[in-house]
Length: 131
Image (tube, rainbow, N blue to C red):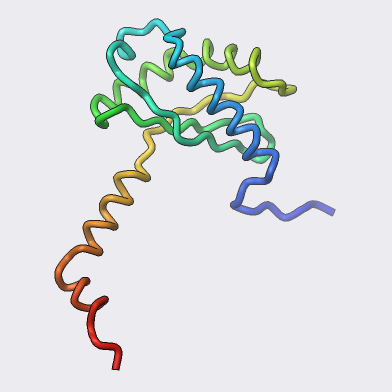
């Protein structure tokens, strides 16, 4: 009997994603990737989401200041084979996962929600009398 698939990742997927995140962040910090798009740009890797079979990894990145996001994504795509090799050496897995890079928009979404909650009409509803 097959286990039903859920949208929440399992413990192993979370652990492997965190190991991959650390390996990528360390490689970026050391400056191992020689691509002109990365020069003078600080990049954060806030999350790596693994597929249930651990063969695909979606890497979320945030360039400091949010500038040139598309150029950074293209640079990561150009260097994905190299980064996959880095992960294969540092993370003990049967298969090195295929890497997909995406801009992390969760910070922007959080700021948008905060701005909505600060609007006067919302504040009025939240602070109103509860009779």
